[in-house]
Each structure stands twice: as C-alpha cells, then as structure tokens.
Image 1: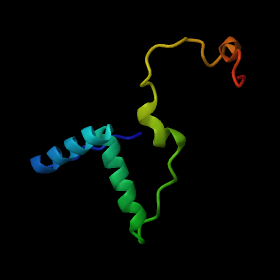
Image 2: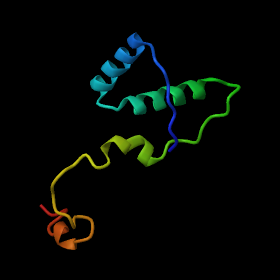
Image 3: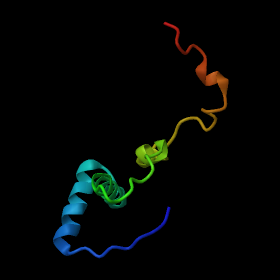
Image 4: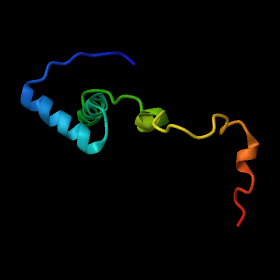
Length: 84
C-alpha cells in the first residue's frame, strides 16, 4: 500500500477523528473508504478494483490476543466440533 499525506483544516480533522472513534476504524481506513466511494460515483473516472477480503476486514487482522498458537494447524482443537 502506498502512503499519501493530506493536509486537513482543524475542523475537518476533528470531524474525522470523531468519526474514526465512533466507527472503531482508523482515520486512514475512513479516508480510503471515502475516496473509494467518491471514485465509484464519478462516471468519468474508472472504478478501482473491488476490495479484497483483507481490505474489508483488515482492521480485524491481529486484533485478537491470546488463544492457542497452533489453532490453525493442530486438528486437536477441532475435537468434538459439530457434535451435540
């Protein structure tokens, strides 16, 4: 992902910070979504690629702490799964 620096007037930065806290998203993610929404509604600008699963759930990656370190690779953790 590339980096873009943007200068915002203080009221816009405050509004962005508040929206970020309210939606539990980073400022960067909110700006990415706003730019993508703008570009998708502008007919003379080609639409960007559809978002990947990582784009859609990227804020969840790494948010869980704890748990077994071998959860994805140890079949023992599935013992009894799907049984009543």
